[in-house]
Image (cartoon, rainbow, N blue to C red; front, side):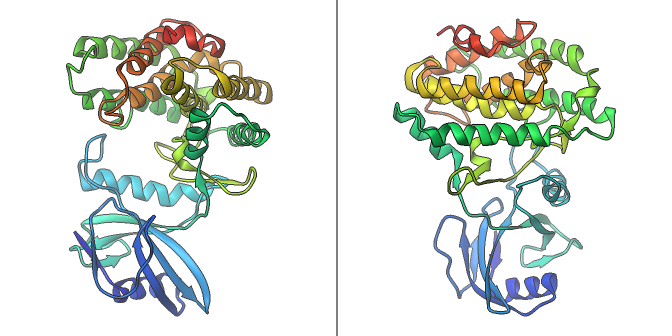
Length: 362
């Protein structure tokens, strides 16, 4: 556990900003901030800090990563993520800004990377409500507003724009596809986290899907011309909307460069997932957004080839959603349809969004 107090935060922020700082309060993100006594926090718990500089109110979030599976077991694993976050958050439009990266020394002090035992990243606080709240509403209510369509269009256009920037090194594409399979956060890491057997999910079923994904790696890893700037974890919990279509993004991860399919599949699979939870199929308002998003992206980007590489990216996201670890209370029929979807898209030469229900067996 780490003990934070006003003195530690005050010393650190004044050193970082080279200005006089007043600590107003601090506490777990999502709870009221408080001033005063020492407080103990475990690694992995974001801390919201309210402070003033020259009388002007400021907010920041101090983030750490807790030890765990998915490639985060060692401190060096977690440090790699935090160092990468600090370096790349600033380079993506609309992303929350990282202010500093540092570490905790012996669980007591905040240092800018000397004798550290755990890393942190300090980020600006960004106002907004998670896009997942929109998806929950769309799942639970049949209505579809003009704002819902406008927000989906804004997210689509944002991806079209950032994906226009080509990557610097073809080798990064090969690495990206390799890590899509082998990284602890991705396909193999997710499969290793599945308790087996779990109902119909057996080790043999997971191995079958993994072998199909391996074939896909060899099919697409040479398409290095597709290397583009990406977010890397573009799901509804990393998107914050304010009024209208004004939004910011958070926590891009797993590499600055990759295939645009990563971002598109990450978001659109959430539309499918929400609809499956509601009715067991893609329908209604969520089908309208899902199909509209794919059509708009294909039209605006001109990237028809994305359909030829999408399958393993779709599988990656489906494995998250079908996971008994991430979604322990998911109804078994929905889990089955996600596995139907995985095996079906891996068996196709090219993904067809119009066949989403057929892929699910819905």
